[in-house]
Image (cartoon, rainbow over all chains, first blue to last red; front, top):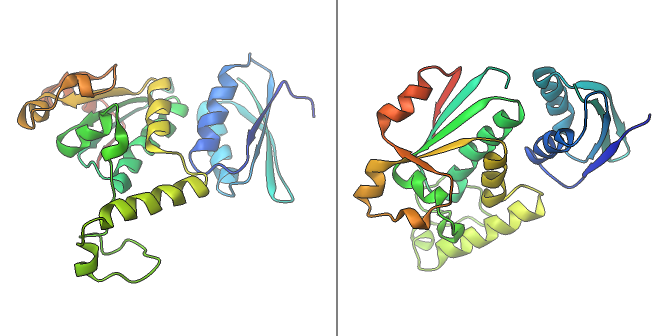
Length: 75
Length: 156
């Protein structure tokens, strides 16, 4: 998947992955894609909730080994 | 803005109780909420520029997980509070949990409004210059002006 920016949130715990995702999205323009990599298992549900509430689209959410990889499209 | 609003009253100044207001406020801001925190009594110490005085005490905190069982009399010994604080901060760092300072900054960056209780400042002879910039000062009525129109209102 193509993306404009990548955020490495590995090793960070709640609520940091979401806070940093929000900040990173702020640096993008509408329609651009942000890739987020985290190791916090809680971020799977949190990222869904974040997307639902903010209107940014969660294109995909996948576990890759110890990492959780998300692609978000900025609204 | 999602149009939603959150108000929090922060009344405690210990390390463990500093987390809920800052975690919830910063997260709500990330979710486009309009957020205000009203800092009163010891909660006001969380607005100090220097956060090194924010400590955790094993005393009167019976549910606190301890690496070794600690009788109350031992917990009351001099130095125990500093030791518990140091250990807790190490654990926080190791687990990738944000520090209070980090979360507080995230709140400010996210547009969370901090209101300091005017009466508390007066009561404890606090100095405004000891607090971070950007704090507004007001009383209970000031808080209600916002709290009355919120979706969520929490007392911590």
